[in-house]
Amino acid sequence: MSSIEFRDWDVLIAGGSVAGSAAAAALSELGLSVLIVEPDPDPGRRLAGELIHPPGIDGLRELGLIGEDSPHGSVVNGFAIFPFNDGEGASATLLPYGEIHGRKRCGRVIEHSLLKSHLLQTVQGLDRVSVWLGARVTGMEYEDGKGYAAIVTHDGEETRVRARLIIGADGPMSQLRKMVDISYETQRYSGMIGVEVEDTHLPNPGYGNIFLNPAGVSYAYGIGGGRARVMFEVLKGADSKDSIREHLRLFPAPFRSDIEAVLAQGKPLAAANYCIVPEASVKANVALIGDARGCCHPLTASGITAAVKDAFVMRDALRETGLDFEVALKRYSVQCGRLQLTRRTLAEELREAFLAQTPEAELLSQCIFSYWRNSPKGRQASMALLSTLDSSIFSLASQYALVGLQAFRLLPQWFSHKTPGEWFRGMLQLLAKSLKFQQDALSQALRAK
Ligand SMILES: Cc1cc2nc3c(=O)[nH]c(=O)nc-3n(C[C@H](O)[C@H](O)[C@H](O)COP(=O)(O)OP(=O)(O)OC[C@H]3O[C@@H](n4cnc5c(N)ncnc54)[C@H](O)[C@@H]3O)c2cc1C
Image (cartoon, rainbow, N blue to C red):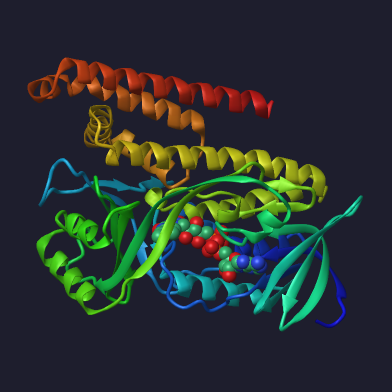
């Protein structure tokens, strides 16, 4: 290796995918010079986020990273959720995003590698943003009173980059997080297997279909150009072929045949689902953003939207504090912590309700569907939480309580095939969870004060 060269930027971002590109565009608006370091600009097809909720798409548009119709993709109007208990041929419950100021809110689905390369290319064209492709952050050095500097390796050359702010946007397995010793809890839930098929028989076009099954969650949505993405969860220890067979039982027959034909032809894409909770999102002059800051099960398809929101929280904190980096990073840490807590709690609760095989989970799952079927306002409030439009833990707590009340509506039907004891145990669990969320909400509000 040759001798180390020194370079200065206001902001260094490790990772030029969704979180890194959004952060670069947002921070360059403040007049800051930004360097993105991206090792793998063209990773080829990868199974990862594609469905972007309205707050994410609106954010990317506002940052100038996405145009009305570029890159191509497909419009999404909300979720269509298929309950497991209704069995084969069941119809979905539609949860549309709804309207705001009389305008229908829409999200978008963009194939993941297309999204990444489009964002990176667009951000390269922005004033004050430089991008080093094929380079990666390989080390972090701490200097008393100055904070961290990053060692960037490119073609065997090392550069020491000093920056007022170093952002780790390097994904769920963030190396930067490790390099600065931010510890984290990690849990591997399951794997995901995905294929692309023709969208001719896709149910509920214009919606993200979610099929719930004790074998896991499966998804199907249009990605544009006459194609649809289908993904199947494979739980830990389960055989992937058996799991896919189990998932496919819930798919409408013609669509199932299309998928089986594609599966028979070749090797599908695969990914792992993690829940990662770092103990902090900020350390000295380093901040984590997007999946590096924490991720959860993709049930709510909100990772991209959350990453874009992080970028706005960071920009606004810096703007409001007049570029006082220390104070801004503290604000960022508190606000992102709130967003992430609500998102993670929601994904975990829904996953447990829909996948666990206990009478309590079954009661919760039935209450959720009953709430959605009977309350248009409930559908809208749930979709606001799912899409991160509403990320208040208070809202989650109150929605949970309203869902719990459905247990009384279900009482006659429940007693016809289950024991009263199971209903009471389920009710007690719902009540305990609802109280816990109220408590979380309260302690979060107190901490913020
Ligand atoms: C199967 C699956 C399905 C999903 N579906 C959805 C969905 O439908 N909707 C949704 O919103 N979310 C979904 N998600 C989540 C979504 O993919 C992530 O939240 C999103 O990609 C996070 O973006 P990111 O920029 O934080 O990280 P990533 O997309 O992981 O990007 C990290 C970047 O960092 C770079 N990098 C790595 N190491 C270094 C280094 N040392 N130095 C510099 N750069 C580095 C990488 O090359 C990469 O470009 C899904 C996830 C999975 C696994």
